[in-house]
Length: 319
Image 1 (tube, rainbow, N blue to C red):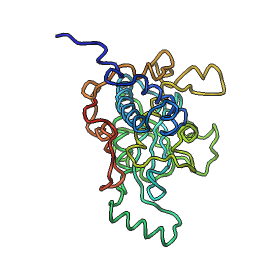
Image 2: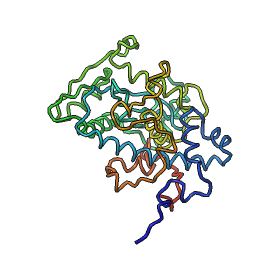
Image 3: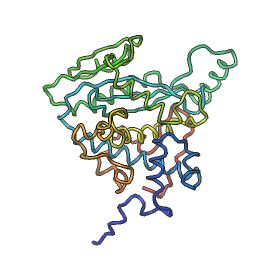
Image 4: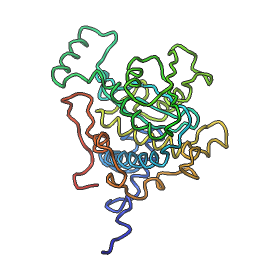
């Protein structure tokens, strides 16, 4: 049989080429979807579909890199969560991040929904109860389940005789998830009131969270660019993770470190990869051995609440 090599490129089925690579650069530079659409000169729905497709390909790229690190990783890991909103302030969401403390490589950015807490007015409490009845309550064990699932996947990256060192804050759900694993893990907890400078054991992940809030429009404290649902927030995290690992330098202050990415430090790449290099060829879930637990991430069907209505922006006939 004969095949056309161009059919396996990312833009083969597109009416307008180059939209995905432009969207990748603009979204990771901090623009919202509507800003990126005006810059490229397309409709905002086109950029939404481009972000959905970038997220799918970014997930497969990361799985390929994780397989290349099997039994080779030796540095400690840092785990922490950062909070944002998905829809409105009535729908808070948290993203659990896992980073290598020396290279800065990001292994996990997984979002889940939370129930609004803190000081609220009577009207806000009534609104929360109405949303709970209509959409259902978020899973209160989501943090523990997702951390346990991520650690089980990352166990294979360490040699069997190596004790994994994991640094977290004093969140009780982290300790419960670690106890459920059979692998021996050295768990180091750090008080959230400790000074967050370079001597803090969680400095790397604290620094990455600052970069995230700086580079992503939807993560800023006061913004109208927040995502409308949890699936959109997770898509942005998948794209952001690939950008952190393969495109952005490990430091902006020192010139040599601007040219070195976390993937280069781990030997996964020999140069910084741009969007056109990362997303040139199509990748397929069967070939990249997509786990069934990650199927909602790939398909964009992640939900913050049991009865949440989600919109898939990818065309039904697209890959």
